[in-house]
Image 1: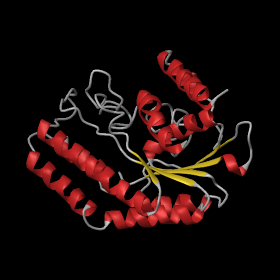
Image 2 (image 1 turned 30 degrees about the vertical axis):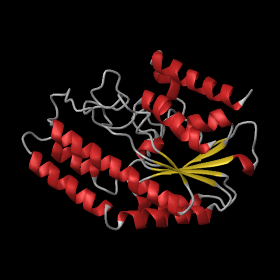
Image 3 (image 1 turned 120 degrees about the horizontal axis):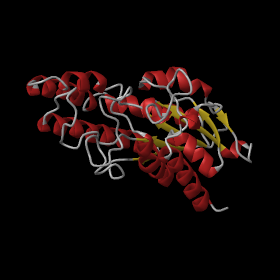
Image 4 (image 1 turned 180 degrees about the horizontal axis):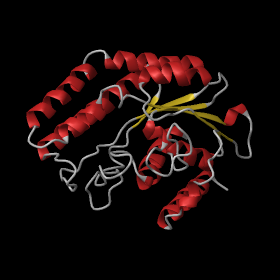
Length: 272
C-alpha cells in the first residue's frame, strides 16, 4: 500500500471512530513505543512537546501526561509505519522538553517532532484573565507581557532547544510544530466573556508565537509546520470548531477533528 493510501486509511479510520463516538476507541492505552512492520532505527520517530502534541482533549487520556490515541504523532506513525516513542506531556514548557524529554531521545532516531512554547508565554493565565467581563485593558496588558517576552529572549531559547534536539538526534529530520488561532471573533459560552478585541489580540499573539518558532526552527535547519491555514474557519465558536471550548474538561485545545483534519496533514506535509 502506498504512503498516500495508508495516510487516507488512517485518517478515515480515525474519523470513523469520531463519528460513532466510541469511547472504547481509547479504552486500551496504546504502548508508548509503537512499532509497525519495521523495527529498524531508520523508521524511528520521537514526538516531543506539550499537551497539543500529546493529543490532550482529543480523546480519553491514556496516561498521566494526557496522551490520547488521536494525537497527531500516533496517527502519523500509523500512516507512515514508523516506530513511535511519545514523550510529549501536558503542561510541558521548553525547559521541560530539554530536561525531561530530550534525554530519552536516541541518537539513532530518524524523525523528531517538537511542539513547545505555548506554556512558556503564559497563555493559560492569559486565557483565564481575558475570560473575565469588562477587562479589555487588563487582557491587553497581559498579552503585551507575553509579546514582550517573544520579542526578547524567546527566540534564542527556542533555538537552543531545537539545536539540542539536533545534537541528540543528528540523523533525524526535525519538524517544529506551531499553534492554530483559537478564536473566531465570537463568544458562544456564558462561562467566559472574550470580547472581539481580546480575541483579536490573542490570535495576534499566537501568530507572533508561530513566527518566532519558525525563525528558531530555520536557525537550526529544521522544518516548521504551521497549522494556521488548516484551522482557518474552525476556531472556537465556528460552525464546525476544531478547538474545544471552556465547557470542555480540556479547554482551548484541538479536539478530535483538529488532530485528525488539522494537525495530521499539516505535520505530515513537512514530516514525510
